[in-house]
Image (cartoon, rainbow, N blue to C red):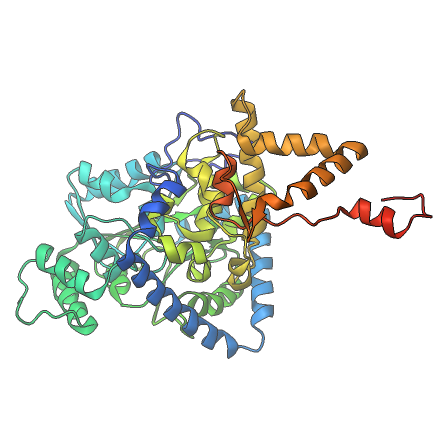
Length: 505
């Protein structure tokens, strides 16, 4: 297949009708889903404990690195260079993978990627595959596509396995089962994992991990096909890289006869020297470790050693849409460390499911709308840029310095413009802003408005209106203090204190 890099001109509202984007959109807007999550005290307790623990570990190991900020600068620069030469680097990666005995496939969207992988598995005659953790396959809904084709996909990462056994969805980029407590995990294993000694199964992490290990061992030994993701792809050598903590990935990457890797096109890096930077940034930012316990690299096929058939599926699925946006392309710099999730006050209180997309948290709130486009209507992804307090903590911890707050503000503006184009009547907020603009355009009108506000100060007491305000104003004052207007406007103060000066502001 020829190289495909669609470069749309400008932003296109919504995904094209003939493009399947996979599992990037939820059923409800974020505010509605978040409201339910806020009512789940156990969820909030699990999230608070997990994210605070990861934050503390990350802060400790980052403080050990004297040149951490220079590493962040280097990571940001490498990613910017990569995005600027992405077509060239992808073709270099394809050439080197092919030269080493691999086969490269190009997938425009989720449907095409799923069709490619399903066909490849069917050609082997296998009806079961083992998987090493991959956000890209979650993004395209690969497990569901394989199941529809009569192929069983078994997740081997412990957290992914928990989510799969519970018929659940991931709620975190790094720790998909972060919303589950130990007691819940034991109950899931009891219901869905055959052959357990229930008397010996406790909710201790070591005991649960041992049960999962025994469950997976047989699958590893009989598997003929494995499917993996890739943290990085090195263009200069055609090398793929997976980093993980449990060793299950190493089993997937070495034991089966056929290996299929699904990789987003933004994961390419130019050289091994560039990879060195990210292998320092990623573990500290993600798991709070100095290095990943398992870093696996492979290039093509080696006769008599490991899989004898290797396929690389390069996935677009909206990435070239984001690439065409001058600021939006910086979201493609993301190395999926999840540091922004762990510091986000919104994510900590709502969890990942409220975002609808497989990419939750601050980076998901920008990456998902960039991949799918914004409609300006009632699409759930249109609400994601508002799922933030704009506190800036996500930017402070991002290992490649993605300015997520700026991206959120841009997407909010684009949503407002798209909404105005598709709706005849403005929103209440837009109407209020137009009225404010009309008042401020005229000095006399603005002065009269100031005096009117001062006269209304008796209607406010301790940050609350004395009389309830009607909708939609009541929605604002219900969750915010209402500033008490001063007894005198600035213009009147100026006139009183400087009576001889005519240049009133």
